[in-house]
Image (cartoon, rainbow, N blue to C red):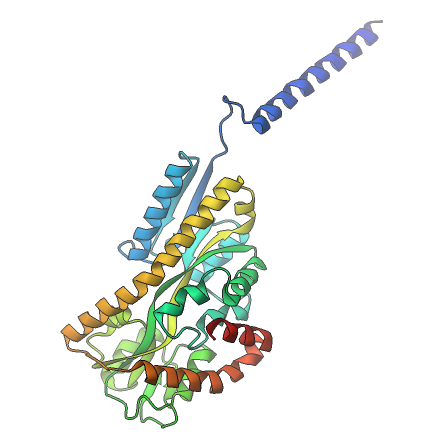
Length: 345
């Protein structure tokens, strides 16, 4: 009898506990007044230094998201590569050990990620939103590639057009069919080497750390890979000319771990996506302003800005698409190259 009473008591206790537990879940799912909203503490990493405008923009993003979620999302910014270089950070975002990032875009997990640096993918500032914003073939494909890594693309941040910084003025610089007597330093990336040579230049892959001294000593005659601002900040004493070929648009990406984003309430997901996309689109307007201001500073410092007409640039772009793009099909595939062509036609 005692055993039976004991068993009955245990049974009643279990039922009571189950009932209490179910009540807590119901309160949460019903959104009762006494229920606290779920909180998220996010870390966002960036390779940009604290004083860079990109970090100031992240601070604006942080303030907006924290305010509109009543502090239920807290964001801490780690600028200046504090959490590692861009390749390390991207890997950590894949794993979810870093939540978000604004970084240069590494390609070690899928070489198609380099499609953001196909030469003359963008010819002018007016094409930026057409190509880089959602709805374009480029953006949809790019988003898909990152999703395959468990990373959600939130937007593409445009910095400015990349040109050539040189010691001397190359002859026939607007004619890509003419071979120039100039040795240009290129990054160790195939697409840079291919397009520079197809524009009539010889190339070398001197390490970036040695570039400044190479320009000063004549080991290299010039370089490709920098916006007007970068040429002003780091190479104004080593170059005499800046040629605004506008071969590439320097760009970086806003990213978040996909699983983390999907775990958030829909209104938080939308807020995060909309806020970062708004800043990405704002960068398309800022890119032109930043380039013009930096070229004015270069000119004031004594670096000559080589005048190029839109017709000359369009002619070079046409040549590159006819000559360099077919060489990139092996890397990116015919479907991608044709899709990108559709974006700019």
